[in-house]
Amino acid sequence: MDDSANALPASSPSVERATYAARNALYWRRNLIVCVFGSFTTLVSLSMLLPFLPLYVQQLGVTSSSAVVQWSGVAFGVTFLGTALTAPIWGRLADRFGRKPMLIRAAVGMAVVMSTIGLAHNIYELVTLRFAAGLVGGYASASIVMIGTQAPQERSGWALGVLSTGVLAGSLVGPLIGGLLPNLIGIRGTFFAAGAMISVAAILTVVLVKEDFTPPPRRQASKVQTGAVAHARNYSAIAALLATATMVLLANMSIEPIITVYISQLGVPYHQLTTVAGIVMACSAFGSMLTAARLGALADRIGGWNVIIGCLVATGLIMIPQAFVTNWWALAALRGLMGMTLAGLLPAITKLVRHAVDERESGKMLGYLQSAQYAGQVVGPLIGGLIGVHLGMRSVFFVTGALLVGCAALDRWVKNR
Image (tube, rainbow, N blue to C red):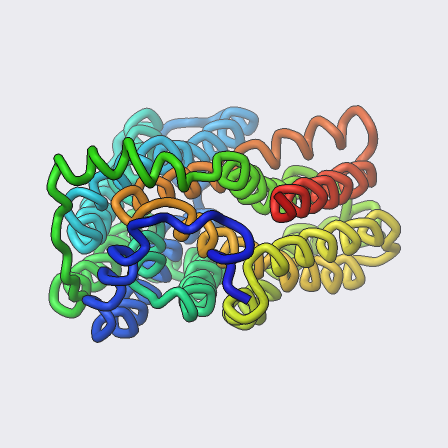
């Protein structure tokens, strides 16, 4: 079932959109491989500091335990804030100057900033550099823009699912490397190693990524904007898709602030809490890795809206039994199932957003989509913490499940329109 036919109005410049994909038909598979590797390395670099971040904060002169926890959270989260702020800007520039320059900018910027973090002298420099990594980075976001616009429409869901698998794998492997590497080369040396790894991705991007890009004439772009594109945009559909993207990350992150405390209530010994909590949190990403590409391909066959609605309902239902578990391995299994159903959402959403607007604005719109996702990543832990404090930890699962089902109802209403 073709989503552009049954859900979102097709833009009259769709021929131009197909022409761009046709011009890059020989390149998009190779570009996908490079983008998966680059996204993997950048996510490894961003997440590898999780195990030793508090230790690095202490090395930079923070002594109070509460202050170490607070500054560690700020230093980690500020990167995603920077990415959320600049993703639409880089997307707009990708529409004007091409997708490959944005990949190179992100890779080179991340390589420089990550290496520089190893030279920080105080906590303020660390936070500033982490924020700069978010502002100039975003390789995964740039990859989504490139693959989302280059892959043929009938293969875009699968391609975006494969790309999502690389991102998830980086998020899983990063903390493992971060737990081992500092013992071998030191904390500061770990940042230099991360910069070197991203430099390899930058070189591969420069050498291997190919793009046939022709900037649209400004007069022509202006004419399209005031004509067919303005008519073709379905703002209610785009708004629903952006809200759904926020909900995906919100649902996945809502339990993060309280998961260790919740697991402690399941009879896990104190000395095993951090290990078990890490396993439970990793199960969601591992489950997503297993099904992201398959569900992306399913969106190509039966339509993105159908996959989105089905995955939202399934995830919402899987949330409920998590509130009634009596041991940690049952929670881990349910989180893994939840990751498997969540995995189909972002590729399908990206596929629909890509075809909702004219090619000249696809980069900008996909940038807004990235911002929506990071908003969910920031808001999710806040909402989960508030609900856990005021209504009880088990209520987090009920509220999140209800929000997901409500989002599915919204998407079905938009689809029927």
